[in-house]
Image 1 (cartoon, rainbow, N blue to C red):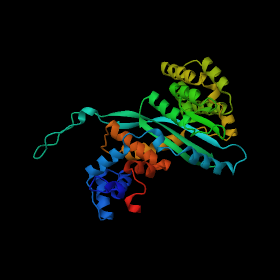
Image 2: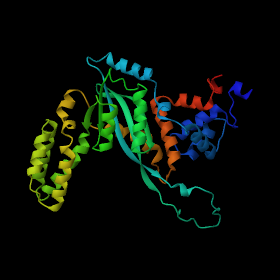
Image 3: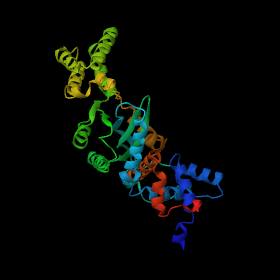
Image 4: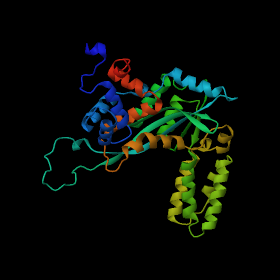
Length: 350
């Protein structure tokens, strides 16, 4: 009877669980429990909401939170109707730091009643949540397609991208695909293997940081000359004269050891990526040259919820939270919850 009626084994039914998860994805569990009791005739503890959210978010794969190939193709078709050329799909890849606590922090501890509070014995650390975001360029705005962010290794993100590619979520024959990232070698190896036809663009602002470092150290005593050299060099990079910039850096006589280090770093960074820094050609083709979209995705998926004052997450819990937040912004959260509930429709819609 419970299965036929779509009832949960918990005292709180699926409609309450769904509302509780919606709240917990945006605010701390305690605040979500307070607002749930204030706005509805139901109540749930913060521990219950925490456990249900982790249960829903467990064992979620990248394809579970991504739109289907047809849904993505429909979005592409809508943009293609308004454009003369094939629409541009941008793939941004980057990492963001997430505050985590070690597994050794788990376990029960004696209560602290009448005992002065003590600093936790464990020490937290920031771990990198690697992510990818795909979006369409529609004139002066972007249309989000999908995001996937997790605390994971390079190989694990590569496996996720391979699943996206094999599922046909990136119809390369229907779009002009480009990849934007910083200079991390592993990113470009993955792009070249899985998406060889993608145009590779080195993030303009990461590139400019190396040029700024040279200007600040080489012309430290003459701010005006530093500014003139910086503006001229960035203009040359934008005008597809990267080879000339590299040649000039090779001939530059370092003014100090610090300047020499900055020049060597800039040469190492730019010399191997001349094909990726033809910014004028990129802009002429309608491609973006900055990685602001993936940085923005890190902010509204990871930072807004995970980087709160005093928050330290176990890696598994943070991954479950990020997976469900990815599902929310990908438009697939309801589908993920339906899979958890194992019933369609939900009791609230019977």
